[in-house]
Amino acid sequence: MTHFPVHTLDSAPEHSRQALQSLQAAFGMIPNIAGAMATSPVLINSLVGIFGNVHGGSFTEPQIQAVLLTDAVANACTWAVAFHTALALKAGVKSVDVQAIRESRLPEDGKLAALSALARKMIETRGRVADPDIDRFIAAGFAKEHVLEVIAIVAASTITNYTGSVTKTPLEAAFQEYGWAG
Image (cartoon, rainbow, N blue to C red; front, side):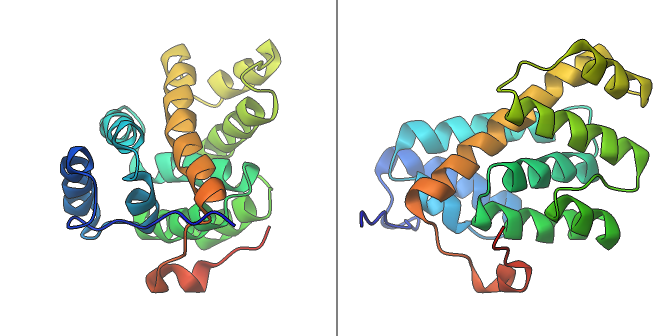
């Protein structure tokens, strides 16, 4: 089995350190997934760039976390499911909605359900989303620009989901209670 290190600020390649510092400032810690990504400065710097854009966009933090959790479940990334469960709950997503997403169901909250449905459809169809799916999303109160913004969130989560699956990133103790087996 190939082992990927989980870097710290001290052990990371020089060109990865600024990205890790940014994530530490954002989360108060360096998530293990970021430490694993830091092996590749290209990957960790790509994540930080898209992360800043996603969290500076038009969606609320609960909406972003609903998409990220949906993507983690759809991509079966155990690390990301646990992490985004914790962040979704912290952001104020109701536990019933978090549990629904973890079980591949739609949340009760209408806006979160529309976001979750579109994100899952994007992953399942590799971006070949049908017009009726987009129309349902817009009918839930979103605009065309939001459809495209969901693509950015899906791209950000794909980076972490694939990294978690490839590196088998260990789950931090703080997220153990949210462990997920799929």
